[in-house]
Image (cartoon, rainbow, N blue to C red; front, side):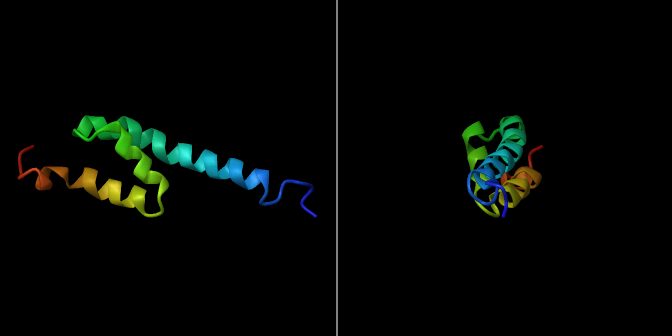
Length: 67
């Protein structure tokens, strides 16, 4: 029905592409905010990217207000 490109190998490829699209930007942004690069792997977990965005956005308040 899908010509061999259903949720088998094709689905796995799409998941890997989406994971790379999420992790690479965080890998570059997090060190600029004083957070280790490996924490970008949290973006693979559902809602992990959203949590990382909040951490980056409010990092100055978490550090005690120093900017």
